[in-house]
View 1 (tube, rainbow, N blue to C red):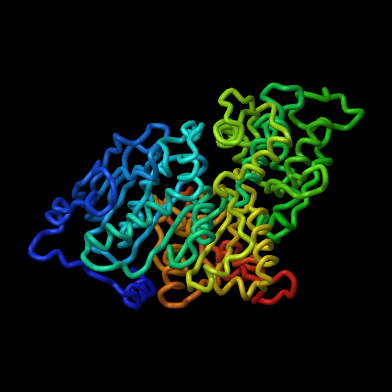
View 2 (view 1 turned 45 degrees about the horizontal axis):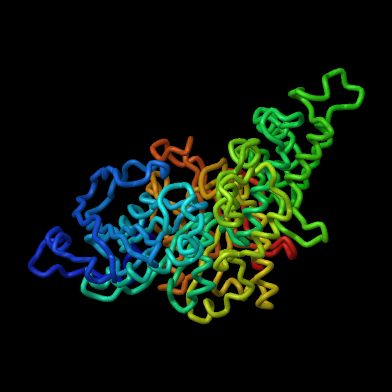
Length: 545
Ligand code: CA
């Protein structure tokens, strides 16, 4: 345990619950959570000793979570909580025996209704009374949105709000004292949920929010993602670009043009804003003897157009912006998703079950009229694109966002766009946004996790997060806690890259991630040494924005 970590633990209030003459286990088993939450039904009440590998037999198989190990002793609660006459939440709460006095809500992803059990275990491990829900529907599919506006309402905002109200009530009842602070952590769809809460419930629903890779401007995001199939064409269509071509020919050319801009050829494009990829050097020459199609070593004219379209912003015909272009580098992972020539499931489901209410809609027919319809419909203001978060700021709450710069599902350019949108709407300088919202760009990180960059910084639970200390300089959840409770705002967050992404193999390197608009800048020396990089404002070359 590092001295820094000790200091952090000591300087924050640590509440120890009193269980009277009962053991924690007895207190757990005697608790009646259903009596505190209106109309709720008890599904699970169990004491879980540290190290238990819980089988998640009741969990929808499409959520791909079959078991979860609890790190510490805890009380596990499962409820069904109605949100209307025709909708409800599946609710889980993990209450640790050693409680920090803090409450934590966790989010979901995509259009899914999957509890992230790894986040429950993560929160409980660090003393948070931790909650999650199925987002109002079970499993990875959004089919139950069809003709059920209440399920869509739950998805748009109500599930997180309901679980948070229930979770705070149950936390206070269980420990017999009021929680001190409330927090939220989520990524992707979960990032959107966090920003939605700051928009809709700014007055202290959460004191601190971690909103990663957020799916903001939701209707346009889902249209942008739905459009890829019509850009790439279907698998085996005449100009379809195969995965091999994306990850070989094209990725190599992306690295050739973009990797060295930061001064280090290491497979990481530190700032893809500076990389204006031009596929023409790998275009098939007009007098080439190789066939114009099916050649692995060049792009046909139509394929050049496809690549250019993917890396360019998406506009309405009148020039109105829809969504930014993809991140160069995204091709490594997007070949199994947006560039796969297959329908992108989340978009397909959103259009089928919500926008068009037509389960037979063919995603190959996607066009701009579908985008317009989605944006006009904007059910329950799922858009999540606030231009003003001053109420959140004025309540004293804090939020941290981050975005991987090699994101294959939500282009990181959109969070920069959202930053500008907030600056414009609030007439705020970066220094003013920094007082309540800080945005960190993570070079070489894919969507919400993984990648060649230093991507481990506590953004999600699991084995990698367990390999770093829970201290504000290394862990984003600890950083937002320190900001809320000690007023210590994070200037940087240091990410860790483990050798082969395996904690047991040790640290490969670490890097300080910079808050926007500062840019991670190589100043010489060993590229893997933290001190070889500094955060500079590209406009002034100074270390402050
Ligand atoms: Ca590089």
